[in-house]
Every structure is written in structure tokens, then in C-alpha cells.
Length: 290
Length: 298
Image 1 (tube, rainbow over the protein chains, first blue to last red):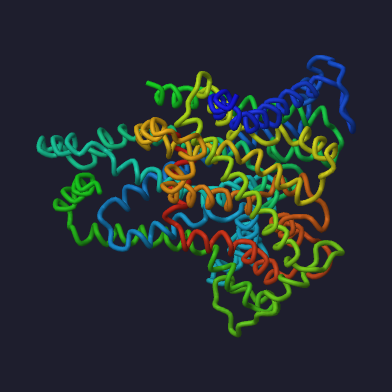
Image 2: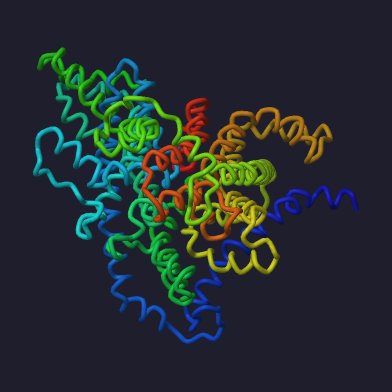
């Protein structure tokens, strides 16, 4: 008997965690997908009625704005964070004095809550006493910088704050990548008289491909989940001009009492993440097993 | 160190003027130092100014006279709607929430990681994969059933409920950290101990755990930072007196009653930020390692 327990002990010990994950992750996802196909409003109902919640969702102007915002946000946020991160990593890799200090100041925003970041940037960007006033006081009385309260531009303030928070982290990823580039190839290229610009664009940057993939996965993932930053900076406003799928889902679930709509929007968010994550996890886990 | 990558740019520098290029490099790096530190600087100076001074403008100016009122106000008096108790009770809510959640999720992660690396069995990789996927889902997909479940087991809206939520959705990451660390430990160690008759728990307690200090530090820091900074779970699953600090901060800042006290807002944001900033300053090395491990699987 004792031997039997000893034999199965690892499985017995891991079982509760696994059961919890099955229930709280997969069971709950199943619930959400199920409810997204019902007529649930304030209370959940469980009679399947097909895809009417999705039809309704895609006919809701506010959701379409949220999706468009997410698209613009992902594109700008990821592209700018990658460019800034790579640029800073290359500069920092030039045997810079005080590298440790500089790296630390680039990276500390990552330790902050998005709520703190949003609060700080909301103050800096407010047209009354923020940057607009600073520049006006410098002698440019006609300077306008009211993005935060401009429905057309408010989304870009979220990009500014998001890039501020995350680009240092991307820099750290690239710096680690740069330091594991195969030195022999570079030496050979230098012997062949290839210029530094060509070495970077032709050899070093292409060899950072895996770092690009990791960074893009992390950034896209952060962007799709972006909720805190939007709430703290703009609360989705002015109007619903900076709404995102995450804030839309939250509003439907907790203030509008539209559980069907909330579940349908959550399901679409999940599917979007899966498109990025599943191939990535699959290839990572496979590499491990080889 | 990548001497070669650095030398590549240097070789280029010889053709230009090396001093000029070096100067330009430091100028750009310095400008970015300003860009990253400016918001923190603005927060600190604003929190130390009086309201009349703030209204005069000079966002970037140092305070003419350092006033600590905003800090004490933020700590014990600031209003969110009609509740005027400052951040203090919510700060302690977060502490009471973070400590057990970090300890429990780290302990579970250590044991899971140990099993999924040293005691692999048929299907253990699938279990690991399924746990890992749980780290990446948008939590919106589980918010509603979680709210219902917490209500059913009677811990909706309080700190115990939030501890459960953070443990459940933290297991994936903590397991990942420990498993990836233990995979690099030579399995022969365990095999030899097994031949000597050591059991599952003995091996864990006397061989594996003593060598786990680095990964424990990384995991604790990662969990501490993400749970302290969480907002989505806090705002969805807690009510009134039980809210964590991020939710209370957001309520204070977005409170529309009364005069807008920017210095109090900034002091509040600083109070919410200080614990994780301290961790970053004291253990930044491990923090970065955790970030890297959390993103580059493998």
C-alpha cells in the first residue's frame, strides 16, 4: 500500500493544481463561450440560441470603435516600442560608461502599476496645467496640446503612456539578444571590410529574430489586455472614443448588465490572443522536447 | 559582453570623428534618461507643492516651499466619493492580500515545477502546456464565472476571494519559473538519491529546495509586483472597504466631488508605487530576470 502511494505520489500532488487549472481556466472559458451563445442579460441563462450576441456585437458602434482602437493601438504601441527598444539596446551596447544606471532608469516604469502610470500621464498631459502650459509659458502662447480631451487624439495619449511603460523592457530583451549574437560571424564580416551599418542591418538585426518574436508576443498580449491604463488615463473617453475591447467587456459585465454581450466580447478577445499565443507556445514546447 | 558588436560601431566611429560620435551617443542616451524619469520627477515635485503654487503652472519647477500636507492627506484623509479615509486602509488591504497570495502561489509553483521536471510521467508535458496557456488568456474570459463562483462559495467581495483568484491564476507562472529552473538541474542528483532510498519529499526538502534560492527570489518578486499592481481583479471582485490600493487610487484620482487636488493625487500615486519601486531598486537584477523568464519561455 505504502509503495503504491509512493509510486503515484507525484501525480497525486500535482493533481489538485491541475484540477484547479482545469476548472478555473478551461471550465470558466467554456462557461463564457456557452453564455456568449445565450440570451443572458442581468442573470445568466443557459439556453443556446446561436450567434445572436455576436451579430448584435458587430452591429454595435461602440464595439466597432473599440476594435478599431485596439487595431490602431496594437500597431502603434508595438511598432514604437520595438523601434525605441532596439535603438536604445544598440546604443547601450556600445560599451557605455554608467550602463547599469542608464538601464535601471529605462526599465523602472515596468515596476509600476498601469494605474500609477495613467495617473502620472493624465496630470502631465492635462491641457490646463500640463505640458501645454509649460510650452506656452516658454513663449509660445498659441501652442495647443489637448490630446487628452480630444476624441480624435485621446487614443494616442494611451500609446504615449504605454510606450513609456514598456519600451525599457523591450530594450532589456534586445540587449540580452545582442549579447548572445555569434561573434565569429561578425569578426569575419569585419575582416571582409563590411561597414558597421551593413553589419547591423544585414547580420545582427536579422539574427535577433527570436527576440523580435518574443517581444511582439509580449507587447501584443499586453495591448489586447490593456484595461488599467485606459481606465486610469481616459476612462474610455471622451465619450467612448478610447474604448477598447477590455473596457467594453467590463462595462457590459459590471455596469450594463449585459452578460451575453460581455461574454461574446470576452470570447473574441480570447480568440484574438489564441491566434498569437497557440503557435508560439506550440513551437516553444516542441523545441524543448527535442 | 559582446565586444564585437560594440567594436562594429567603433570601427565606424574611426571614419567619422570618434569624439563627436561618442558625444552624440551620450546625448541621445541622456535624453532618454530624461524621458523615462520625467514623469516620476513631475509626480514627486507636484506632490510636494501647495495647491496655489500648482495652479500657477510651472509643471517642471521645483517646489518653492516643500509641503508634506498632500502626503498625509493622501495617506489618511483623501476622499473617494463620500468616503474620506485616504489610502491607508487600502494599503493594508493590499498587504494582507499580497502576502498569503505570494506565499501560497510560490509554494505550489515550487512543488509543481519539481514534479514536472524531476518526476515526469506520461502526460506531464501536456499538463504543463495547459497550465502555461492559462498564463496568457485575457482574464476577461474568466471574470464572469469567477464572480459567480466567488458568490457561491461565500467569499465574494472580500480579501479571501482575491487571494484565491490570485493564487489560481498565478500557478501557471510560478510553475513555469520553477520548472524551467529545475530542468537545468542534473537529474543524476535525483536518481542517486532515489537509489539511496530517499523519497519524493526527502529529495525535495534536502536536495532541491536548498538550491532554489535564486528562483524563489525571482518568483516572489514577480508575484509580488503583479499582484500589488493588479487592477482588473481588484475592481471586479472587491467592494467598499475591501478594495486593494490600485482600485482606491483610481477612485481618489477620479473622484469628482470637491476641488481637484493634484498634489494629493500625485502623493497617492507615489504611495501606491513605492512598494514595487523599492523592490525594483533593492532587487532589480532579479526583477529583470523574472521579466525575461516570463517572456522568453524556455
